[in-house]
Length: 192
Picture 1 (cartoon, rainbow, N blue to C red):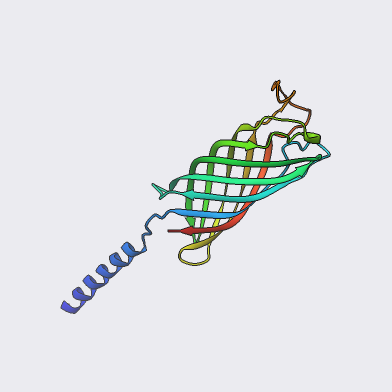
Picture 2 (cartoon, rainbow, N blue to C red):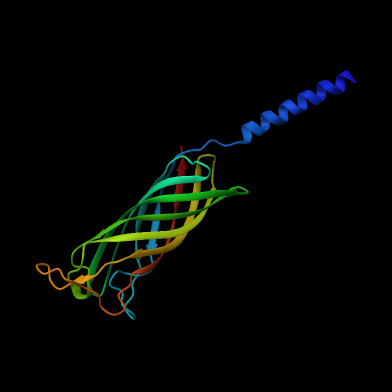
């Protein structure tokens, strides 16, 4: 009987020790990767061209699976004889949940986007700054203890308008000018 109690006590102690070790501490997440936007800013119907570029994000340690994240990405491309170079700076919340070995997350971001002056069709002038919002999610698949591969996507909103001229910046919108975009991204996450 004495041996049974000792073994029972040791096994209970070991299981509680292993459960305590299994609980993961929260880390910062640093992400870098590729981003594709579904259309150009002057992409009217019949003349659409996707834009692509690079992305960088940092997510702060989680509190109840919720993280504050800052996301910056730049996209480039051309459509209708106009170059388009935009940079998005957003921040917001990211909620993640572990399913097996993968981490599934959803995020909502709000911020600012800036673009070059002559982005309109045939290089017409346009507004250079706009509010932007992103709603999406994705999965992080672990590659090692500190690194994961991320595949993400979602809905991006911007509100750019063309202007009459640089000296008279009265905004107007041409028929079919897009404000709603799809965005996909993939890259590497480093947890530190």
